View 1 (cartoon, rainbow, N blue to C red):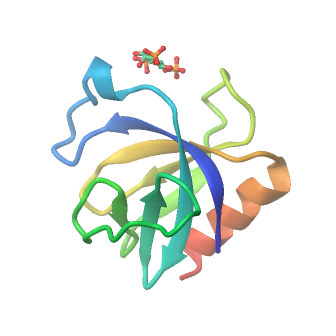
View 2: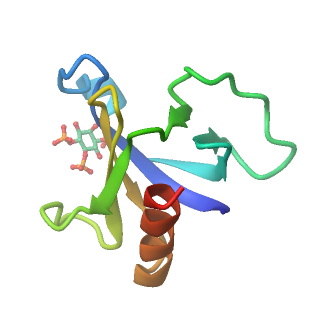
Length: 107
Ligand code: I3P
């Protein structure tokens, strides 16, 4: 699965709140491949991203769910990874949000 999403970092792998400078929403072209969610700057010749980079999120033991507590934007889901990091993703509509959640949780 792949497509454009917005991402907002909330909690770092150490469990601490993401610093102010890195909490803003940013657009990415997301690609789900081999249990890793790669966040590319765009869909043109995606650059190589090494697993372990903040833009290559390992999905083993990760969990996605609708972020019903986040009311500033629509169609937002939360991704919690095995290292306790958390980020929010916004999709363009509800169906796409459900598809991303299922794709992440069912791999
Ligand atoms: C905002 C800034 C805020 C953050 C907000 C961001 O980005 O990072 O700290 O609020 O998130 O959009 P910008 O500087 O680009 O305006 P929090 O610290 O409360 O997360 P929000 O859109 O969820 O309010």
